[in-house]
Length: 178
Image 1 (cartoon, rainbow, N blue to C red):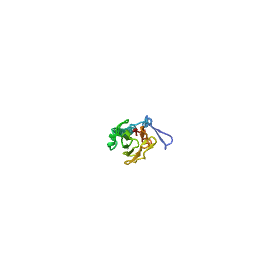
Image 2: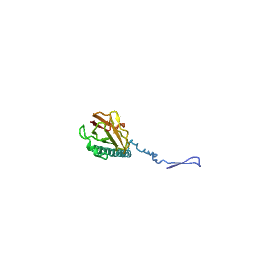
Image 3: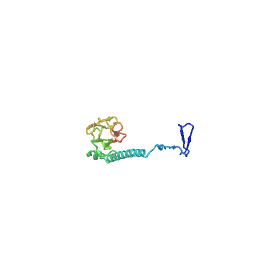
Image 4: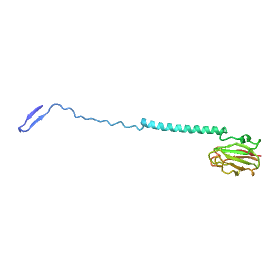
């Protein structure tokens, strides 16, 4: 350090000639930019897809169980009418038909010309039974009605439920009038 005295006695100037460190320039790094997909996002999406898959699997198992149950004929309370039914003609004529959710039991049967059938609904929605241009009344779940076949001539016909979508879902069969 050097001290210079100037002519003016009231002013004293002190100059520091020691090297000074360079001014501190701290650069604060900004946080890294997010890449758009984080682990947390992937975890949430994976969880949602997993839950959806579980729900879909449970639904599919339920549908499969119902299809097997109906294919085995356990879609309702059985009865002697099924044993009296025949497929494709011949045999004893039936007097009772059971409707359920997307099945007709028996699916294929023989009936006597001019007979009256008892039509029971064991399903959970309304159903009816139609042959050609004649049909039963709409039957509520757990109820039954009669279906007069007087106008049908001997022959083989298709019978089905006329509720929209039910025939396409399997509520159809073949009936032979003798």
